[in-house]
Figure 1: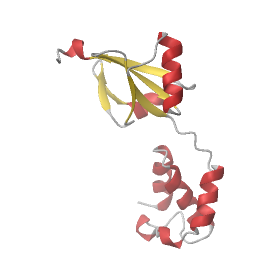
Figure 2: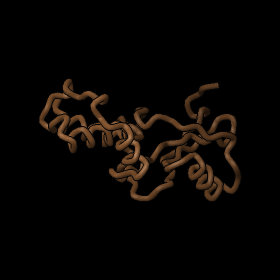
Figure 3: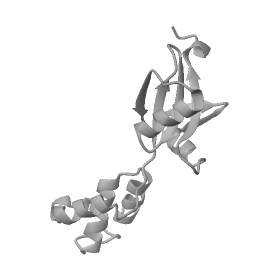
Length: 145
């Protein structure tokens, strides 16, 4: 895999730190975008400069996560949000009470919608504003006790 392809994948996965390191290494000509990924050596980076780039969010990452908010013993709501605080606030504004808990889930979790399989990462592309409710889940519907 080439550095350019790897960088695109890192950006798609919203890995801000690694993306900034790769960007820095290419910019400083320590690697080329056409090099094989095996040539990447993060130790060649100026860590102070990269830390400043990350602090300034030079690559404009606005990471959106998925949170599972528990309504009661069996029911959960999934909310896309930039932070746990934003997810809880959106839940309160929508359901008029606080959730029992709020846990960050993985965007790579796959599940069925009808006959199709989709991940939260792919579903997130369907939304343009955040926070947003992705869906809900009930243990009762599966017969899980």
